[in-house]
Length: 120
Image (cartoon, rainbow, N blue to C red; front, side):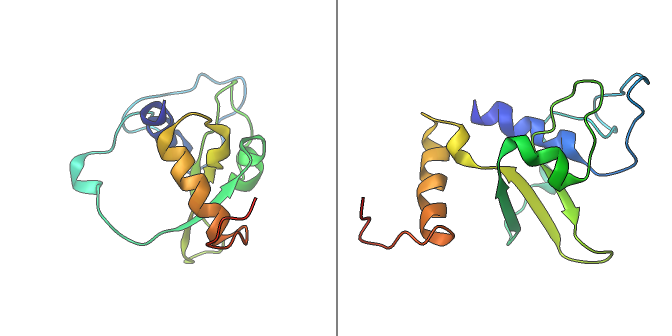
């Protein structure tokens, strides 16, 4: 499930919206691509990530719904030349996925104020 969600992330490249009645071009070299990136683009690094409710993804990404395509995540710069921000669905929406559970746990510490003693 996580691999499928990660693959769909590539669908969210910014650009001019496609009119709702026009056919949507998908696949490598288009705005809507659900595959893995070429290996040369997979690198370690620091990224600013905003975790949002999936229902808000189009809003925060500045993208209208296009021909029923589901926008899962995106990267955008909040101002011209600014730092890129990755907008991701909050991991709590992937119950049972170990990676999502780990990330949800750490986000509760990092941004939710949950202290290291893990009070319930």
